[in-house]
Image (cartoon, rainbow over all chains, first blue to last red; front, side, top):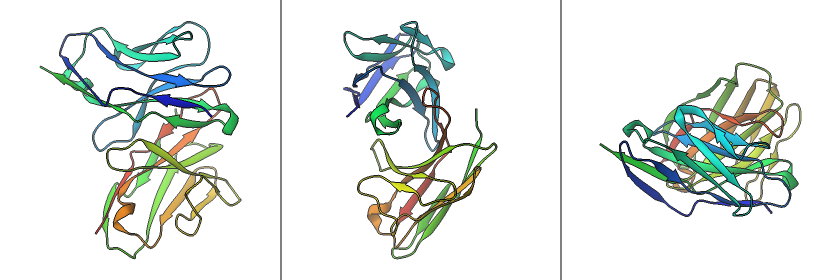
Length: 114
Length: 114
């Protein structure tokens, strides 16, 4: 079965510094990987995805993610964090063997301080 | 992208009662899903809402507890029946297209059972 892990429950970053939110995955076959963000009292918003092609994927709000097949990772990055980036971030993978349903990581709380 | 309207946004309910959550999409979609997000947890898929037939439930979720309707391609409801405090969660509606596309989420229903 497919799975995804986010090893950090919380990431703290100073505003203006680069940020990384980590994600590793386990799949059989080619992975379909996604990042979502959840602001307080809101649903999930799509940030970016990797299906195929370039390993560096650019998404919304200045975020990007790097797909690394050898390390089975899909870390979310941003060169310069904003206080408004503070939110809960979820990595997800498609379970191709289970009808394509999304499997979510446990989430990482990002806190950006001024 | 799809615009999803989910109602109510929040509710406080007495144990033993039932709550029906509505999900309206601004366009016809093939795949609709219902998720549960327990406090401090990730998202767990409850079921796939199938248009014109019974929903497909994930392990641990049953129709008697979470009856789902999907009368057409733009609307679905989830009922949380005979509620207990353990049902206190955020419930999210989601829609998807093809397997290599992202999912879109409603803003969620925050349910508190007292």
